[in-house]
Image (cartoon, rainbow, N blue to C red; front, side, top):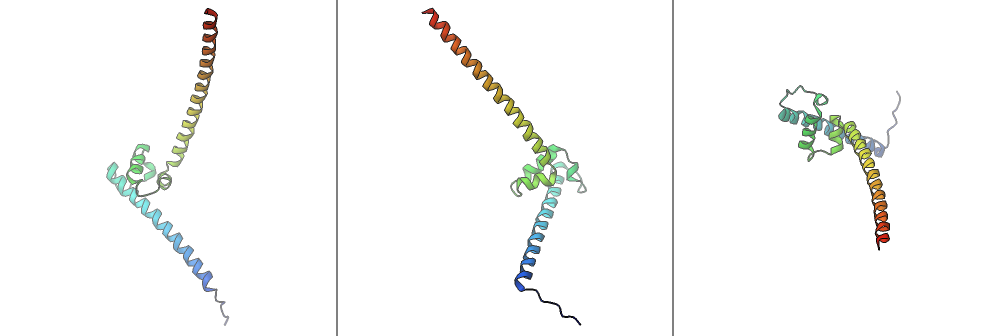
Length: 126
């Protein structure tokens, strides 16, 4: 009969604490998913067999608005599959802002040129 080596209590405790933390994360994720399903049923009036991924983006944003005080926004977006949509919108907005800033800079340059030309014309009149 072989004797099993006993592991150090600190190592065993650390492993158990890691398992506990992992289980807590799993519980939190499952609670979030359950809560989303319940709220979706209330807001959208669809059956409890609904898949949050099949909801429209409008319905998903209604869920986010309803649960954002309870859960962190990144978690909600991830569970509902809105993170990619948000990233796409963010990129679009950034590109639009970059274009607008370029036009403003162009207008500012044109404005400076007009001001300079006006000054030259005014100085020629005197």
